[in-house]
Amino acid sequence: MAGGKRRALGQHFLRDPDTARRIVDLVAPTSADLVVEIGPGHGALTGELERRARRVIALEIDRELAARVRERFAGVEVIEADARRWDYGALERPPGGRVLVVGNLPYSVSKPIILALLEARHAIDEMALMLQREVADRLAAPPGSKTYGSLSILTQLYCDVRVGVRVPPGAFRPPPKVDSAVVHLRVLPAPRVPLGDEGRFHAVVRAAFAQRRKMLANGLSGGLGVPVERVRDAAGAAGVDPTRRAETLTIQEFAELAARL
Image (tube, rainbow, N blue to C red; front, side):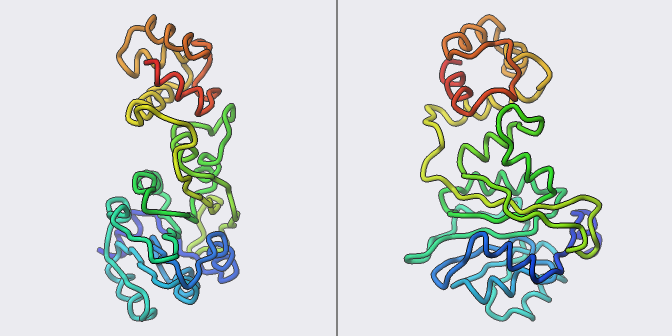
């Protein structure tokens, strides 16, 4: 069962100590910080984190791997948990320290884990997440690029985002068939643009990108179930041309549009 779970998640284990150090350096844990590690696997990052942080909580879904990590790293608190559903929001900042999240995410479930972390952003200061390279690029993508989409906007709304370390397949066992990259997220004290209603903003962004080839007015009309004329009026009031495509709009323009819909 354990091996089956690993295969189902498409897990590739980091085995290069130099890469592990560079990843941990992105968030630079200190003896005041709490670190949550997602998917410790064979412990390439765990030892580096244990050495530098005040406290390390490792989330591992695989019982066999969890037992091995527990045995190898006595100072690490290992919790058998699904990183998509764990309650990050309940984390408490240590006095004078930060809450950091570090992990080599299973690529097949990286998106729901990222969304869970963004949901719990009030409890988190910084993250260093290993992702499939195209997902990392998508999180950091600017408006107008092919990979810019709803995930880019939701991440950039709440975090400063940069692709920190590119990692070749040879740094893993078994080597994945894709390139990987670590994205460094620094949570902002407040959303990048003021939002009256965050739920409405999210709904507008999701609807706009659900059919990204359509013009904005048609995509939003279909996605939100509102008359196309109403969308055109709202876009006009927001100073946004309704014939544009979703991937050309900035976060600020989406906020203006959502406020008027």
